[in-house]
Image (cartoon, rainbow, N blue to C red; front, side, top):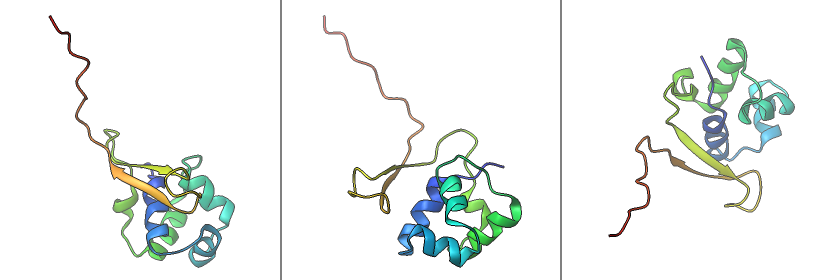
Length: 102
């Protein structure tokens, strides 16, 4: 079971919480939340439960899809800081290559 940290970040920001404030609300450290959101660590089940309870969602809503399709987020550049994210759904459809004119 792999957690999608981008989904956690997007939901946290949508609720209007900064990283440290949300981490305190969930009962975990800000450093731990940062590592989870950035995909550097996978939370233990009890930690994931704390996070989803604070987000007001179910665990299955923050689990990464196995086929790799899921939300993708760019942080910082679109919003001008690291506390907001511009997210859109990833498309599993391949983009066509360049056409050759004859």
